[in-house]
Length: 277
Image 1 (cartoon, rainbow, N blue to C red):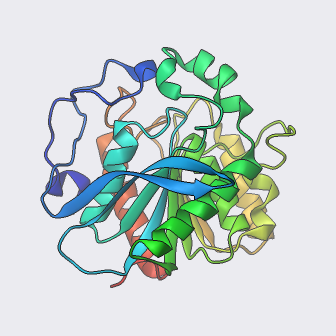
Image 2: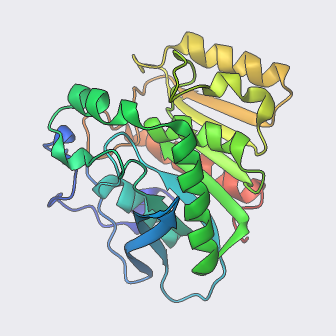
């Protein structure tokens, strides 16, 4: 079943990051009485972290949990909709605002400024700890973190790789076009290629062959590192897709690759014990 089979495709009416306006006509907005979704607050490191969650409306928990990690644009409408789509599949999905301490991505109108003035200031160690607290919130609100997965997009794809080496409770991870290599800094001390040997959970990586920001050379380097580490991981490259090919609200959207990636993600979660069936 494709994501759009269960979803109403409507014109976008707001809630998207200003840095990616206007939204594309392909934007998917999920609207279903079968899910319950809303805003919440997650206690984390002495502060209350905003988050969005979605879960099945009718079925009783505990539900398998998926942590959803934002793009650089924060938990805007696309990430909220990813949560709603996962809820339709039977998951409790939660997307925490992972740089709420540093600023609000809705205040930035272009991607370079958003990245340089906000995103680059967020330490990986803080993000990983915040995700731990989001998992704890899920456990207290009907989630079964013995069946926990993570998925993330772009910035969140990289974080998903890192989290698979961070939390031994994680059952599976799916990283969508997350950067694999890069300069090491105080805030980003390791990249996915550095932690291939440390993975606690199987990771599926989904990448675009036309992605100008993530060269195929770095994807091949990651494959070699995973092979050398004897890690349980797989990387799929979609030859015709570019970066952000699952971002249906952007011109980069490549529906065929996005739909295939979605099905592969669900199958990965089933294979490694996140899904209940």
